Image (cartoon, rainbow, N blue to C red):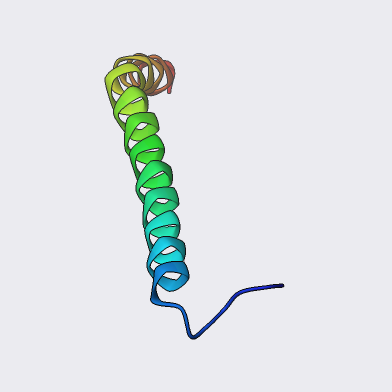
Length: 55
């Protein structure tokens, strides 16, 4: 690796890059959770009703 610890710019840009990557991953995770919530409960509720009625 050729990181220069004495330069403030490389440290700042690497921090920004890490923050951008973390933000992007967080947003992707939240979008996936929102999709699962909007699609999931209706299907899950139907399955739960069918299995409880059969018992």
